[in-house]
Amino acid sequence: MPRILLVHNAYQQKGGEDTVVEAELALLRSRGHEVQTLFRHNDDLQALPRLTALQQMFWSSRTRRDLAAAVADFRPDVIHVHNTFPLISPSLYWAADKAGVPVLQTLHNFRLHCPQAMYLRDGKVCEDCLGHVPWRGAVRGCYRGSKVQSAALAGMLTAHRALGTWQHKVTRYIALNEFCRSKFIEGGLPAERILIKPNFVDFEAPESRERSGFLFVGRLSAEKGVATLAEACRLNPVAVRVAGSGPEADLLTDLPGVMCLGGLSGEQVRTEMSQAAALVLPSIWYENFPRTLVEAFGCGLPVIASRIGALAELIEDGVTGLLFEPGNAEDLAGKMRWAMANPERMGEMGRAARVRYEAHYTAEKNYEQLMAIYREAIAAKRMETMHA
Image (cartoon, rainbow, N blue to C red; front, side):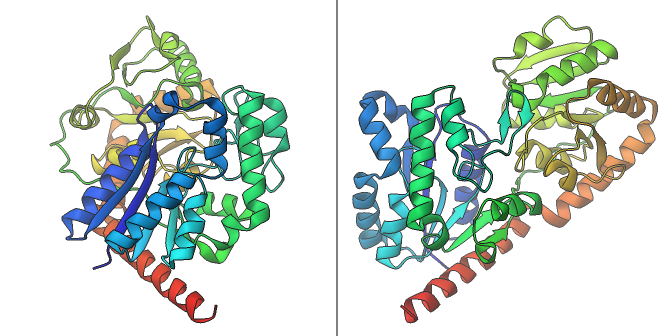
């Protein structure tokens, strides 16, 4: 039973990545593993001078001290990292290497190659920094619209690329699907070190009720395709229930048939999923692996999604859902009309989605995959140490 040190830099606004960390922590402890955490939170940035915060992004001495103490006290068999930006920093990988402990890094976004983390600029996919020094991201101020912060982030990425941090100090990477794995390889990560393990959800699906209407779940922000959804609802007024909040909420206000529910608990979301005809996922960026998709499959809910990035891989068109051209409101409206006119076919897709969930996305399946990855990482580090 490997002992795990779980490392994560939490975001100020809790998102899917933070939820994945919580779920994996609960999963490991439920299986009897000893797990210790090394967590930082971005709320701490408010107390730091800007120059200190930028310096920590490059290299955190505190992280090196904290990790050394955790390794000496807890003696983990593996260190599993989710996010190090900005407070934990890549110094963690070097400290772990010095301690001789294998490091796993789950790749939740594209931050290692894209300062903006989503390959998205001006509402469109942008791969200008993929496989290159990310100077364009710095010049354009892609990170939070700040050229200073973007330059610092691009500098950190470039420096650690030159130092070999990403190539040699991480024992194994975890990509969430094949599409993302291919992008990380294209960006320069070593292919032999990248394994695939999807996200999972662990819950008892509520009993399905009579299904009708559509459901959107997520942050109401540009990358989620809120504008596309709003325009599709104007073209084809239908019943859409919206669970979430965010800067683009106004785009959905007062649209016929659209009911904005605000933020909901996980249980409330699953209740909504048990009575909708389809989940609408109109993202315009390369979603890595939205948990809402897995939750929908677990609830027997088909998904109508953009044909972009991993979504085109995760949703089988006509089998577990429907795909439409990203950003094309007319195409989305047409798919929604078809779904309303073919409830039996949508029901079949929902049942197929549930079968897909049981085959690939349960807690038990995920645990088996995670243990296999841990074993490989431990063996790889042992071999590396023997040949050092």
